[in-house]
Image 1 (tube, rainbow, N blue to C red):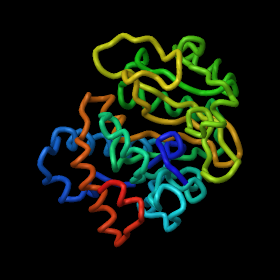
Image 2: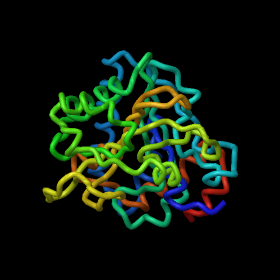
Image 3: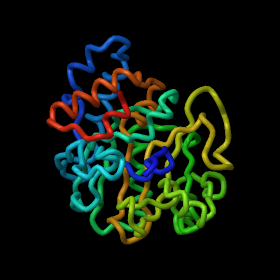
Image 4: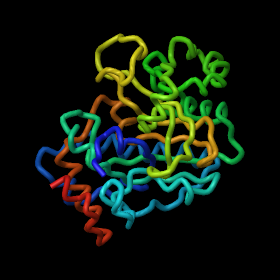
Length: 285
């Protein structure tokens, strides 16, 4: 099966890094030490925030899935079925398709997503939770936030309008058939990459750099926007929840990003630590 970013980007979400980032990577030449300090602070704040909200941390799954027929056996999403309601996870992830886009600052060979499933949540609950974390706990500028979704997200109009994020101005609605065919998570997310069951999502984007570009009017957004998370607002293939890219949240906070090479070392060290050699690793060598 040929893999590209559109195919592989479908899923993604959260494990524990601060102390887990391998010393091999931390001593690599070209290391952005400033980013790693900020990243460790992001993780500490995420853990504290989720704990204060009543969530319990659960251990991440290995970087190797043991199923080599998709993404070269590398984990590309937190395990939706294994994460109980009321828990959160910080999951290390890698996507083979990202090798083709390594020139982008916000694409990395190893990254971490924080995912949670609030008990009994609906789409408005998950939307409020995401916005609370981003704007209140991390002080992100609401004027720089935008969303990409599909027409099924219209139920979020009221809650976004109430939060001063006007749905009409902030949400790019993709054509439903196009988003389903793309299977790239901005609108629909397939927990089983070979299955037909999906959940409905809103991709959360943040405008970076010195620009006042308006919310995206076409998909994919320009390079001025980086996707920092997904809000699950509907569907039955997985519990409703949120996921936040910890590296991209750090990027949004600080404008800093690690180098590809330093995280490449971290990916190999992570696999070696686990004693795993999934075939997808060869794409990164």
